[in-house]
Image 1: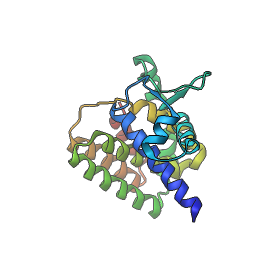
Image 2: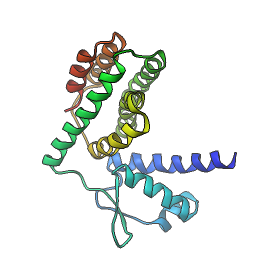
Image 3: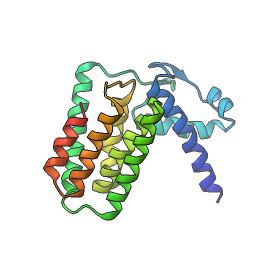
Length: 201
């Protein structure tokens, strides 16, 4: 029981910091210290160290040789373009796997993620919209390759989303994700990949 509480608190802190980085509240190159964060959240420095390690693995933070930890910088345009290609490659691979025979579990999880995204879009909270968007795609990645594929995909998606602002209306965003879902639902891998390419740009 104690272990689940520890994991829950750590993930809550990670979620808060993740949202602050994605929204820009924590600026690129801003320094984070275990001591300050431990005081802020009322937890041990060891707990904070675990959170910082997790966010570093996601590509949101950078820990340097002198042990200082800072928010990662926004990627330059050429690196951003490369990350788009990497993301498309990984997610195309995932869609081609799951669309062959989409399970009821996958379709149910995608429906739930789509509903969550729709609710967040109404709130106009960029960080929550971003997390809901990521979760929709994470469901597909997880179903296709589990932790191995998630480990490849997560640093790319997280770095891409830092201070990311693509101009699209809530209706357009839902339409794009719904097109991916509907194509997977009918087993149309090509249609799902085409819809994915319309969404990732």
